[in-house]
Image (cartoon, rainbow over all chains, first blue to last red):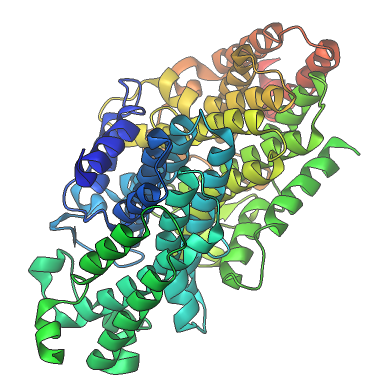
Length: 289
Length: 289
């Protein structure tokens, strides 16, 4: 099965397990709205690529891990879009959850998606309890306090923000979890796999800052200029466009150089260089060339 | 150690594990604000009482389970108090999290507390992976979709609400999880333990409805009359005060009668009858007598 199809199938199974007539139908619909249609699936693709490079000997555990990672990402988007944060009307070219449904359901959708990540791990990794315990740890650390996504977002309520720590916690941490979870799902527990994801996450955040200034609303599918408007730290503001592009390329090099020895090291390296080639917005790539 | 002290110590350990200088300090403060000072700890006391009745052979697993249950309860209160739900100014006699801090931190505090429940289970039950996996399942089902606390709250966004299903999902489910988790933590996996918690949860919801009409704001520590104002289902409106009190007593009887065979069945029965005696507000108990 092609990677994209496998990821969608894994997500479908995760959702099917909690979709019963006993539950409130609008919550189920809002959760699907948040998770399907339009996502690039970058983090689960990374998780899967690492698991496959490590042998992917328990595909059901890999599927649980990549679905958990993507579901957490979707949860964070739903809450980030809320009126008290970005107050976004659109996401991935569709109305945000609080616009398509209502604000209470958007809060609950984010909550229930966080929980779905753990439900998915618990179900999918039931046959490998040692890997499951480690995956719960990895996933929890990636979303919670003190250094997960919630903490990253919470830095915006602090008087002093450190750019590196903020970007690491906001984006790097879920990428780092994706690579570590991929390796763990395949029975390779080494935390050295985190570096690959961490650097790619930083690169993706720089790319996001570049997209924000490139200001191509149709392609991005969400309002632009939010970082500027909210006074958030931004690599482009700190380094300029050429400096940010150079930083992005250096991060990708560090990422691929960090890949630990494994059966599929070379194909993984090639795949990552291909995918990250698309990180830089076309208009800025031309400008910087 | 006395039960109350043991519960506070277990919660302190759960929080200490995620309180590091690397995290944003205001998020850590908001999480503590939500979880300490004023809570009755009814659910963790129930969890602990069941675990002790079942032998409590792995106290560190019991402590993880009861802390996870209480932390989830606190998470649900923080989100329930948000402007888009109850818009409450006070909780347990203190400002709510979004009043004491801000609305973004209140959303993140709820999120991070949900995650803390799983982090706590993962740490505390590491030595008993089989029990840990089951506890993750129990806790996730209690908070998530399709029939956990989030689902209970989401019923309020549905055009038709079933009183029984709504109350079960909103309160009963976390009580049922508390008793099942207590038994599971002690190595007794039987889901028959859920009935005890489920009935007590329903009784507690009826008691909450009674407190709401008894309208004693100082004692309750939160604004009253919310159910009426929001048009929510309410046992007192359906059955009247004497009918609701009779229903509460019947539920407690069903609860204690359901306690499965275990070494500490009689002391558990006595404890529950004592504690539930305090469920009915004094003013209404006099009136109904």
